[in-house]
Length: 302
Image (tube, rainbow, N blue to C red; front, side):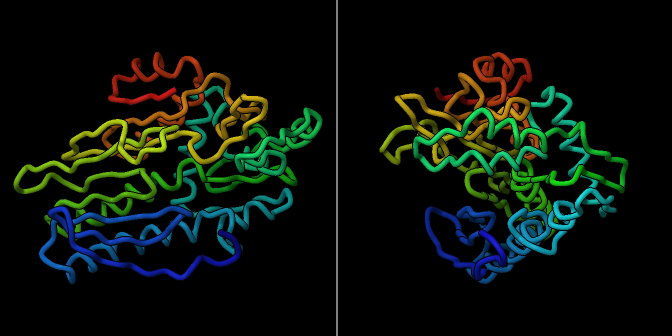
């Protein structure tokens, strides 16, 4: 996705005891599942949710020009004043940077210049990584809300937090718009708006990594709350039998060693679930120990 967002449409179908509305956003297939009274009501609710997701995509995508991310990334060392919503996400990213000891870093997106996680086998040189790492490091930024100043050439990227934030925002709007239980699913990161009036759960499948079968690795019932998954199922390099995940340790500019293939976390909000699944991946070999210490339900696949 670059330049301008694709054409935006919503399709509504009926099946499996609920209504399903599908759309595309954030380079992912998205859907709203509703136990609503008919297609018209489902389309109304889906339009509310999709409009919010598209708004967040337009505002925070690093692929689009003219938005706040573009303004920050092209400021060439000049300070940029940001709005309260952007400041909130920057504060959250700062917290993730601190608690991960710098492994999670919203300035690390520039590493895409040397890493191509396309399933190929080409690894960047140590010199190429070192050169790009000069532009990585949230500690190099000057952030005092509402003003952000980066060194010339540095960029920020909300790709690690924006989709989960969009799930929670869309879910909150649906909670205000209807008493009907709805499930918001943005490319596998999802949340339920409220309990169903009949106390029935949503059945959610957790994808099996590395299997050619479409049968989920696990099935669970979800009445409230959220799920988020981090993994390397579709973005990786493979060289001499070694698989290199797209999950990078921002301090080294190198894939996290001994990380799980996939981490799924259940939490009260998708933002919280996404935070923990990402931090779990960044822990590498210690992912399970880290997640057990958080007291959350999780699923790891190696």
